[in-house]
Amino acid sequence: MTAPLDIRGFRLFPGFLDRPAQEALVVVLRELLHVAPLYQPVTPRGQKMSVRMSAAGRFGWVTDRRGYRYEPRHPQGMDWPPIPEEVLAIWRTVAGVARDPECCLINWYGEGARMGLHQDKDEADFSCPVVSVSLGDEGLFRMGNEERGGKTESAWLKSGDVVVMGGAARLKHHGVDRIRFGSSTLLPQGGRINLTLRVVT
Image (cartoon, rainbow, N blue to C red):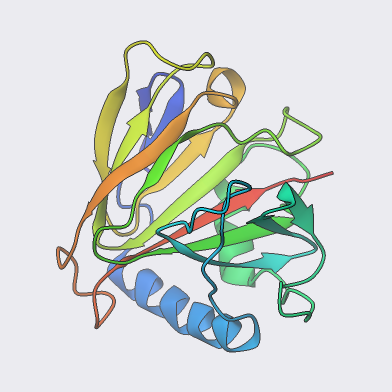
């Protein structure tokens, strides 16, 4: 494993997953999404998000008119499937904590999708990092500060890149401004999959 890049406390591992590992992970995720299909969430204000979403693990992160929260079941009523071993192996290599993640959020970005600057703060234990895995098209990842506003930095995340948000970066704002649709051949119809691993309780 090559040494990570440090950008504002965010640790970026470029090319952490090689192409065969990425392809194998996509197969596993397709099976998972048959059990817990992608859906389009809405914000508490009723706005449709541009990403589609699902999850694996004890909990899934959901948003609807009732607010942002973790739930033990998919909005359609089924339990979330277990987090795949291939995903747990990534966490165990880079996270640096004894606990395993309890949620693997799955976001799918189609053409024109984005994710506004936000903090991950619905978890109970901020001593555990958030680990992000990128698959498919490149995404422009923006990294900010704990307080909203101020200077930010951005980096293009490519398929197979992993980002660890822990320590000083754990509560910093971050988001995805845009994707380069069609920049990767990993997903036949294009798009970007982002896995976000979190300890919830």
